[in-house]
Image (cartoon, rainbow, N blue to C red; front, side, top):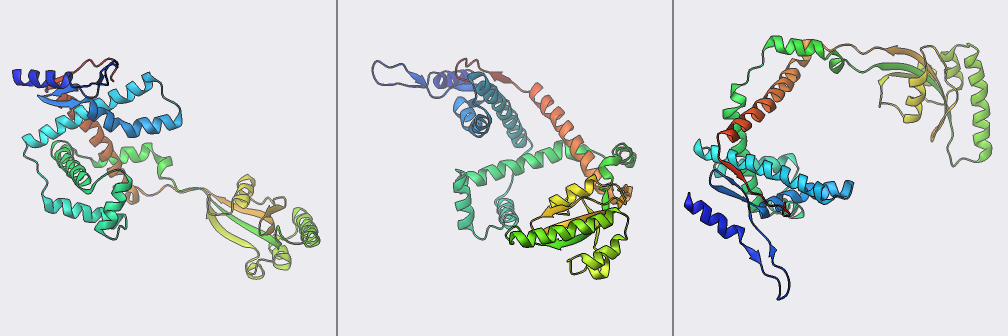
Length: 328
């Protein structure tokens, strides 16, 4: 124990001495001691940089905002240190071959063709390959530890899954779909004014007939410039939100079944839309979403159990947070 205090003292008085007449500036200090292992101010500042940068881009941070982020990072580092110590206690080790396979998986999933390309990609993130390999090793050790201590002890029962399914019917209901027809008059924004006027005049005449109740299929066959219209009467088929051009979709969503739209303009020309049917989304069968539900519940339980496990791990540890007013 005395050795730890001596080490703390040495680091706490680690100063950068500015030129004569200037004030000394602390560049490093102990921020926390976790079971005799230290977390330094330098580590906190380094790990906090991405979060500070992202937050500052959204809105300028004041000292209180920066301090809040640094303290959150300190707590994350304490948790990380405890997990590392637990992994050593349980003799969890990740071999070089496992690291190599993990790196190969990363290359394959991200379509990185070579080792040189990976090194180059890491450099753009400010990482060397050795640093990345060490990070990957830490992540794999953590995953194995969490699997042993947390996930292996989680069970998801059939009744739980069915209860979740019943309580989340909307989540497992297919999107509403639509069946519509259109009559199309081809033109373009760059067409001569006379051509656009002629197309609009014809379109308005046909629109009046459609609004008066004339057979929409026959009108499409007679007037539509959609090549398939003569065969299918302007049938657009069945589709869901996001499947159509925004201009057409916006119009269709506002229609009731059997209703005919006003004239709709798109870059391709003019359209008259008739909504034939709104088809209510069906609830997916339980068996078709069972695996997805099991994963969702398992993930939720894992997060809750890990949070509890981490709290218990910390409660049994010796964690001393230093008072670094003005530095954190």
